[in-house]
Image (cartoon, rainbow, N blue to C red; front, side, top):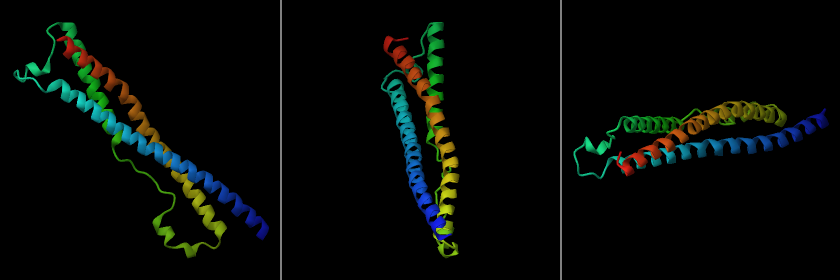
Amino acid sequence: MATDDAKKVAILKTTLDEQRRVYDWVSENFRHAGYRALTYAGGGLAVLTYLYTGTSSPATDSLFIPEATYGKIFYFIGVILVAFGLYSMLRAALPKAYELPTEQERLSELDKFASELEYLQYVNRRYTKCYASNIRACAERQKHLDTGFLPLVFGAIILVVIKVIGG
């Protein structure tokens, strides 16, 4: 029986090493997606700042809405794309619930585990639960990032072109 438990402990330790690597990878992706979302949102806001400031004319002229109907259509399409892109980026940057592998209250009660095997099984279950929860949070953040990036870029390009060519 002791040899069987020793084999289980060895297998669980190897499994936990792999689960730690996966947890670290998911955590890094989660953080980096948030950083990218904030960076893209900042870039979008910088483009809007460039577009709508620096004119000495009245406030209505700083909107640079073209006279032609097709120009107005492209202008409003660009504004809607940029607004949607910024909204998606800010949604991606919002804090999300994120689980940790070990629960604080369980760590303070380590003497309740009967053996090393029982503790390792507990940690294994926690990593499995955290992976399922955290991968959903990471995928949701990445979905908002992917959804908002192209509209933000294309909307900014449309608006910059309209501003540069003068409507």
